Length: 470
Image (cartoon, rainbow, N blue to C red; front, side):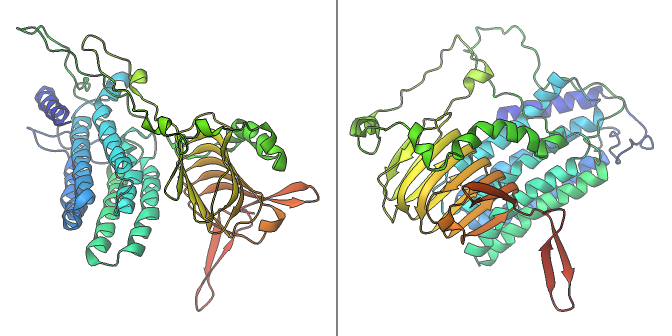
């Protein structure tokens, strides 16, 4: 990563020497990102430096006060923002390149985002996990440089995602250093929105004159000595964000989920299509399965895999670890079942896509995290069923459950049983939620409001759903 930064800085230096000097009065529309004169910084880069010296500097200081994983995470955030500053410096003095060359220029930012999010996943057992999650869920805001038309609302959306976890931090930690850490981190994205509004309102501003920004990497030249083996292939290009990406496509989602809906609508008959899993195939009952080591993968120095081949799928897992059932990384698996349950056990479902899980008996709680097109059928839960950071979830209650919590989720259908009609359903930062209630051998659908109206009644604020929200 340091090598990439050095090459990027060198490329900027060469490009600045090549750029044509311009008069300061010939500023561009949509902000005052005027090309520098005699190596001077443009106004938008100077404004970005104010963000780095202010909110970012405070965030780094409070992160060092907390220490541990939070401090390491903060160093990664600092590197990512410094890299974005270099990118903005290129944009201020050069014309926009072709799409492929733009992907090369955006690649270091994409790599930093991936590094920060991977660090959170490697430290899921940390006591500071909510701190790491706040950063990991909002760091994609750096992708605003690729958002067409209006990048400001995109950054605000990422800031809202961080707020979900920073509220948990404020709840768990009352010390001043943690409170200040939350305020300093959120202020980074608040100031970023102001910076974008002032200098890049309708998208990243490139210079209207000067040379076209070339790719980040120079073409290889003939070396004086035999070259070393080629490095591993780089990750794929970063995603190009558009305003349409942040809007849920309700019609297409219904079409994609129709097959899963049909399975869940079978009610009690859903178990007829499930296959019985013998004890020999269950990880928690077969020591041979647990002892199987993951084969070590070696890279051939003479071959370079494609970016698609470099993406490795994680190993599916269904096992009982202490009192927690772990169901992770399943794809296209609709016969998952947990039969032998106890009241003190919890179920944690993570990273499963287009799969269905059935849980028999009575357990303590269920958590669905970071899943897509996931179906869940369960009998009885004495605590809470929580759905977070997911899309297209179908949930069916066969018995009873006191509370269902839906957070940061897009698309959630909850099928209640007659015995679970009194359960509490709590939602936050979620959309396309529907509750289906049994009536006369059929289900009747009721949408969960997403839009609210708040008024002052003279003594307090009163909030109620609007008529548009249903």
